[in-house]
Length: 456
Image (cartoon, rainbow, N blue to C red; front, side, top):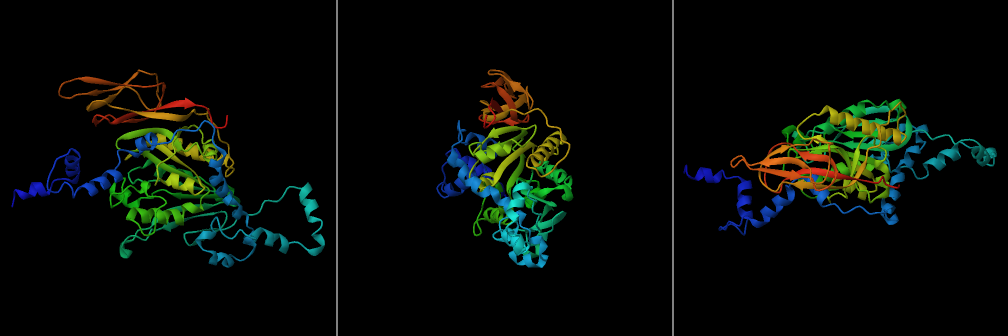
């Protein structure tokens, strides 16, 4: 009986490794489907996968590529609905869908007609031709079953309704509805529960906004993956990566249902989305945007961020950013730092970039010092270790390298052999692994090569 315990405790990872190595056994065929599923769910690193599987950037963005996003971008127009002249109770029946996309049809026309006397109907067009049009007032925001009046902020709760009812723990959603009309900016953090920098970036950004001076809405979800955050892991309780299941489905896996609930309840109400991440698997990133520069609306959107590099990436199916762009929402991923850590420099860079974006979009107006334009990196590649051992880096994040330059060494702890890792091209280190034990083929350095600014 005692001899059976070590075999029973054999880890699933070891079983998968043995199967991958071709170890035959009575259960080899039966283990094939779970092995494939495990590899699909637990990819090497999405920071690496996102770049290496990306489609190349087009020299000139094709016009048809902008058709889908452009149709959905003017969703800010319903915010100009002057229905605030009617009692708030008249809008209660519109539900969540009225937050951005509902209640606009006929709302503006009805308000003008009710406020115009019969004798003034002829003179109205002449007056508007000579005088500036008075901007319509902001409207209440309908979100998550609540109504947020203009010029106020509140904390709402989102729950995907997938937990045991008696143990359900809703996810906080920070909402600011500005006193003036404008676009809706959504910020999401900790889609991977171990990525902490984004949580603090969203907290500082949201609580620095003054509702009375804001034009538009800011919706922040600092901790999307609350179970993963509480457990200190990037994954959901079922070991799935939430950022591979958007926009999700109502009747799929746990990850599908959570993704579907978030996307339908919150994300579809956004005009712009910034999904904040960090490096994973002991890798760190220079503050940067991941954006599909083949979509003109997205390429233009990236120009509002200050002091940040932009890496072209078409995204992977199932990513929140990819699903949002497919839904007509201008969306990017903001990468900053590494997981399991709070890094002040990375946080400051993220907050400055989001502040710059809001000013560029006309949402805020303040004295803001624009930094020197950061080069945009459309092309990048990961450099991998050729041997296993202990990695020691000779470069740091942000360093500029030349082709052939030694970026680090992999030292064999037994033979004392030193294996250099060299840059394959001229560029800048925009991501790298921290010093650690690595295996052959490990992606160690992410080098970006400079390119022209989009549209120039």
